[in-house]
Length: 301
Image 1 (cartoon, rainbow, N blue to C red):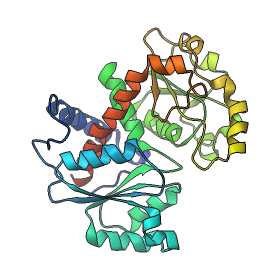
Image 2: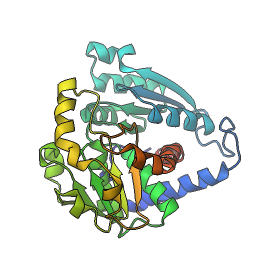
Image 3: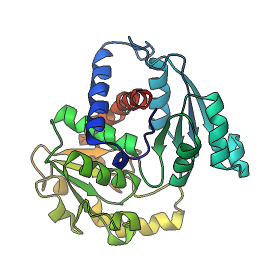
Image 4: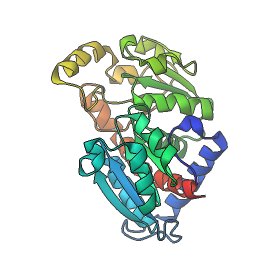
């Protein structure tokens, strides 16, 4: 039994094994309807709870469909349906859920919830997103890059914009999978955790950062907790980091652009750039399904 909480906790060889297995699962489903179960049902007789303290589209649907295809059963619950909304501790909740379930996927705005859940559970715990990291998204991104281009080792990846939880997982992944990571965004939006990390380069000016890039990654400037006033302020500060065709053209000729969605067009990315790369964004979203299936299989291996 293993947990999938942060990329930094997992050996690089294990990360590569997850992606290789995910590729095999994806290949086995070519020309098969989405409601058809996998040939080998790795989650037969397993019950997996999706516990979401934050709204979700891609994480919820990809996990629910993946669990079904692998032969498991899903319970999807929001936190306001549980006693944790009435201040029951996560440690007590973890002990109780371990009596009923075989695995929990937690999506939360507080990374310490994941740590408590993992420390007090006797079942695997997967990080479906926290304020600190989004490892399922980033491993799926790397899977997508390697599916299109080849190995990410030695490649230049540029994170453009707000240094958020996804950015933090990219920092962890760059150390494990040996790619160059450059972060370009306002210094005032670098979290203390990201500032303290030695595992990336920082370049304030996007025109400098994007030179010779193999991959540009951008993301929304806003989190769900930001007020209208905070969003307005962030928009003013972040304008120079909007991804335009001119900025894309600074990078390598065949540079890819990633966005994990939802997209706020003409903020972090211009609408015409989003349209040009939208099929890539859909491939990222699709691969969440296959990679998360690989992660779940790995947790039980």
